[in-house]
Image (cartoon, rainbow, N blue to C red; front, side, top):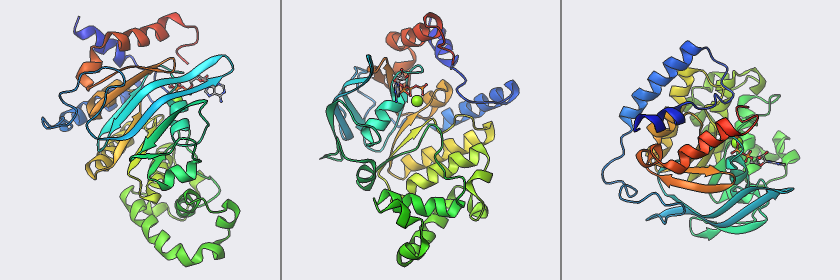
Length: 317
Ligand SMILES: Nc1ncnc2c1ncn2[C@@H]1O[C@H](COP(=O)(O)OP(=O)(O)OP(=O)(O)O)[C@@H](O)[C@H]1O
Ligand SMILES: [Mg+2]
């Protein structure tokens, strides 16, 4: 019985990863090694909490209430209450179509909620456009990377900072208009590119990068505004196993530097290994949350995955 839930969750859905079986096995081994390095400290503020959906956290950086978004007759997001603890890695899991990306879009101002309010670091941010949310310190990456393929890696970095400050996009494309701040921006960009091992690609077009390097660029771009919370939408999808390991290291480093990470991921080994806390959505709602151990054996979570995998046509997409 105890083995069964893990197997169900481990089945995953192979989202976007075009790799050979051998590589998947290798990635699993690497992820399992990462698990051992990421043991939650006993003094974790979340250690004693029960896994009730919507449970209050000791020091939440993000608090959302009644967040709803419908597309036609479909309620894509219907989150009654959610709190994300500051300084943790929280994974957001759930079957395909559960509403994870839509929730990201709403919270970060890339889409408008029909209902709901939310605050970041104690300040209401519901209804603010994306660049204003980013300026407050909450940034996200995209499930499909948004790097501008016909700009260089370095220009992508600089533009991320300029764009997030809400300046005119077209002005931002004309170098003389942002030259005064350019030196500082470039320095900051190069520090991040070094960190993500992309410095040697600074003058390459983003379109020349491999899929994995684009994921790294996406993460580096998000950090250009010096955020206190990063929301990563499937940062490992389609990435080769060696780079997956490197991305995992980067995610942990963000948390270790004091940032809050909210992280959508389908690979349960990765989720269980890296997370301080796991939130599970299904059909727009938060159906469970808890420590990785609590989630592993949570009946609602298992049912959500089983229901999607076996009952719904096209669930494997
Ligand atoms: N712009 C849109 N117009 C219509 N329906 C949408 C739109 N965006 C999302 N949906 C629907 O809302 C539901 C939630 O989608 P969402 O992309 O948020 O799920 P997800 O949990 O991110 O899934 P995945 O794991 O596959 O990325 C799905 O049924 C999806 O088809
Ligand atoms: Mg998604």
